[in-house]
Amino acid sequence: MSSIKPYLQLTRPANLVTAIADILAGLAIAQFTFSDFSPAWLVASTLGLYGGGVVMNDVFDAKLDSIERPERPIPSGKVPLVSATFMGISLLVFGMLSAALFSGLSGLIAVIIALLTILYNRFAKHHAFMGPLTMGMCRGANLILGMSVIPESFQKYGWIALLPIAYIFAITMISQDEVHGGKKRTLYIAALLYAIVLAAQLTIAGREGNILFTIPFVLLHAWLIGRPLWNAIQNPVGPLIGKAVKAGVISLIVMNASYCVAFGLLPLGLAVLALLPLSMLLARVFAVT
Image (cartoon, rainbow, N blue to C red; front, side):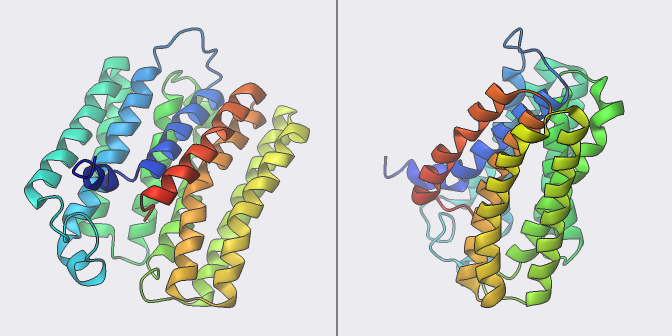
């Protein structure tokens, strides 16, 4: 197990659970009836795409991590750079093929996600604006991948993908200060983006006639992300910012559960919410950022 753990660590297992939640939320938004198990290909796809994306993140950051985070699997020597590169590319290919096995459109969306992850890791990551935007587009496209189960849903609900883009923009923006500490202004901008996303979810729930069931989910999400963000605003040092980032990533599960409930699928929302303890448990064993 000791030899496998560094490879698992590269995939950010706690984060992988949030990617599954994206797909389930996309299915709910598209009003999929869960009459068969064919969307399992989309779940497999997101595991490959997200896993491959974060592995390649460490591949491209190997030199920087050797200075800032030498304990990570690649700079510590626990995972050779060549092995990590092969693993990352293999996972991305698996993700694209799995989506293509569901439908040609899903396969195309998966290719776009894979390209966005490479664009982020290779070029955009350290850019103050393009980095958060590109990462947000990856997550928004992941929601669209779930919605591709019923392509007709794009016309009416495709705009909802803007919400995870804004949410991940906020998380990625503050994560850029995770090592050296940051500015309160950045954290306030993140708080504003969070508030916009939460308000939009309540608005959607109201339009769909499911506001009462959605409010507890949105309030839980607000509490989970708001408390660590407030602590970071009070003292914007690296460790507190790191906790705010970790909370934001893991709480994506609650955000996705909120979509499910907003679109009238309370049982699915509860099932997605049940992924939260699993993600939190994995976050104790494996790094989230």
